[in-house]
Amino acid sequence: MGLALLAADWAEEDIPLIRTIGLLSNWFGPLAADALRRRHRGGQEALMWLAQRVVGWGRVYVIEELCRGSASSKARPWLLRHSCDGDFLNGYFAGQVATSAHLHEATTGPDVDDDLIDHTGRLLKTMADCGGMGLTLERYPLARIVLDAYVGHLSRQTATLNRYVDAAMIADHLAQKPAERLGYTPEQRDRLVRRYLAVLDREDWCETVRAAHDPDSDFFAWFAGNVAARLRLRAFTDPNTEKS
Image 1: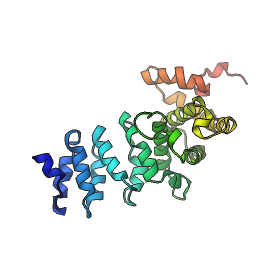
Image 2: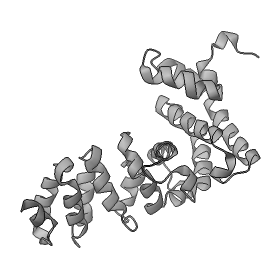
Image 3: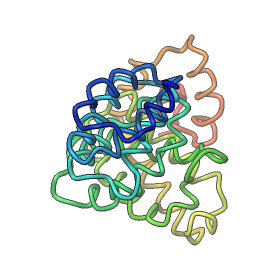
């Protein structure tokens, strides 16, 4: 009975109660998110409040509702900067965020900041590896615009470990996929990959990664043996053996 009531057309004053119930996101997330979206006043604000507090499947349900149709002007800045929290389940909504929040316009517009670019990297990395879950880079019609804009902004950012890893995984995906599946000729794809590598192999970026990464972690053992090895990244080679 409680589930039926939650799905019903509750009054506007019930928003705080629905929002609170939505915190039990693994059980009531879909119904709470749908009920809040139906509220003409206060629903979007409540969804955003909830999105900042739920994880896992609950985050999927709430962000999908925020993206339904086209993201509102209130939700769009948050979606473009904070929606992906690194969880594997982000793959279900990353493509929806890119599409409904008009990522291509944001990354080529005048209001670009580090949070937007860092989150763009997370979106692109997620979409590169979410086959069977959500919209992939191969099926995202505006991928070329965003991939080009992202690496351009990346080249002007200060090096950090997270920025390096995200960019490297995107470059590795581009290098491994057949160019035509990404909408490129082989020459165009290779030129784009070289732009990513030009940033990743800069001395300041290499020094940052060598100083910050944990060589004993399982992730970096995998990263070094796969992504770094395939791309021949300078940061993961012995500086004393590099050819001049």
